[in-house]
Length: 210
Image 1 (cartoon, rainbow, N blue to C red):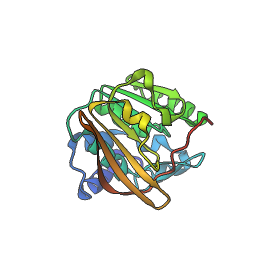
Image 2: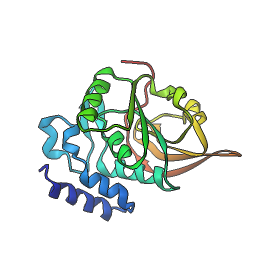
Image 3: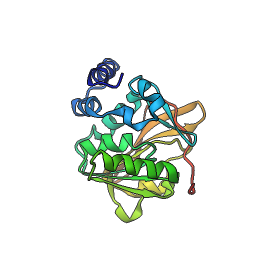
Image 4: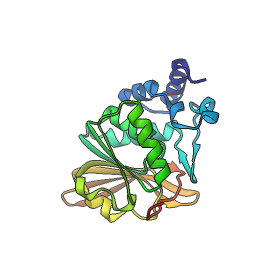
């Protein structure tokens, strides 16, 4: 259940559900998702469902990872991306295969430590990690041409929008409970332009450190 054949079947399901970016599909086909969950859940790693990773957090379903990544890249290649909510490290690994430099912030110390060990063991050299409050982003490394947030907020954080360069985009879930929408915010010279993409369901964005 963790073989390359299983990953390829997952990718074909994603293709059937509308994912079109071949680079994203190749990345998900090559990335061992089962290494990003507890061993007891490894046999479910390639189902199109979210999986628990502890501390009330989840690893997003493959379609969500693929769609958010495809959306972030849709306006052209990116050079420097910030991820808010490292979690297991899977989304950061996907981004690191497609983008030269990835910065990722996680507020929960045990998840940060686990992801740091995991990503290092897998050989990623272009991921910078930080244990910090994701709501403030990473001002010292701004501006970014892409930001991807993996937790839902009631409003797009102004601090994150300010860390986008002109032409940059933020992909994030907006709303609380069952009423969430996946959004893209583009920073243009005239201001911020928002677009609703799809319905979604994410854990809430929380401030502070754990």
